[in-house]
Image (tube, rainbow, N blue to C red; front, side, top):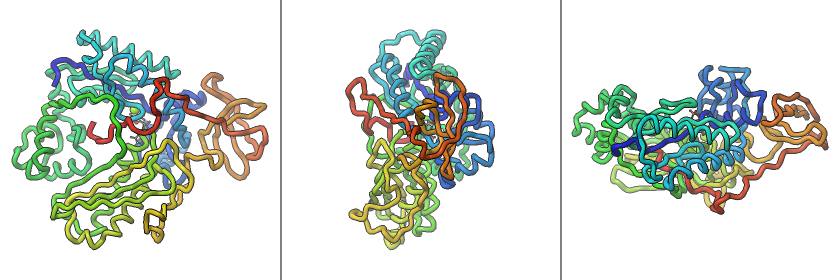
Length: 458
Ligand code: TTP
Ligand code: MG
């Protein structure tokens, strides 16, 4: 752990929703939800106005709609999010050569490596405000929160305390005070499965963990995991800021206290993991084609099975269905006792692709498995709420809704201020989707998958 709060963590506020509010002035100050518009889809994020109604990431979209019927529910514009992300990372790269992006809207910066020497709270507050102001300027109005701490864990926690639209510092020496009464879920390395196992030992908040017996913890979680948690419970975290890392997969794993032997026991765990994996995939801005299930059996043998889809997706229900199908195929194996279940995705692409739910039969024998058929959200298959359009007479605008051969468009942009709504024929020859393209990376580096942190423990 560092003696100075020399780790900076930045995270944009309500990122996808904020980009939509920036580009759609009539939505500023209003509840906005980003998520698929089909009944099966889940919420990516919600504006702070929508959060007041209890709407949050990973909630089914239909539930969000019933909590706040007046919310604008949009399908998401990933190119716009990637452009904003790149602008923000550009600001951070001015601070230090060591910048570690964790997702599209979040990164760690090693200030010590950037030559910063004054870590007084006034200097750091000023630095945080300057960075936040630069983010507003380069992105055309997005707000970020910034945290400083003596480790990645503390900087990230400080950033959460700063949210929304603020700066916060966790001073060295006060780490334990900050975390002792918080749920163990704040600790890096504690997901829902670990939290459940800790709860069985009566460990719910960080302070409980600090008073637990090491032997008991080791028995429950294994030696490495137990010692890591004991250390972070004291605020000790010496993980390095690693710069850009190439990550090619995102996965979740659960180890079980007693071996599980049936699909029925494993299915709900796989479904929960699918939701978590899909959330991290969306945060990364990518879509995945391959879904993998990994099993570690009682005899410690490891068995992995994958399925490659014809199209790339980010839907939790697709990941869950394929994971379930892969488990079904291995029913006989499960009887030997499953110690560990992993669900992961790989084969990243920047765009969702057509043929979303068909399975690549060349690589599989899954044809008998029924997969959900929600409509595509990301490839052009008609006008989706939130899409950018241009009309030769009325100018640029965005799709409010469409159906029955009609499309309703609000003609406004970030530059125009709130504009008028018009309902047009879907075949109106003067109306078309606005082509959007990610500009070439100024550094000439690949804009493809590869820089997102994939261990989920940050
Ligand atoms: P977050 O930083 O977790 O959330 P946020 O930026 O919307 O809100 P805040 O940080 O102010 O709490 O995630 C960044 C973006 O990643 C988010 O805008 C949408 C996307 N995302 C998903 O698509 N699914 C998810 O489950 C999560 C958590 C995020
Ligand atoms: Mg954010």
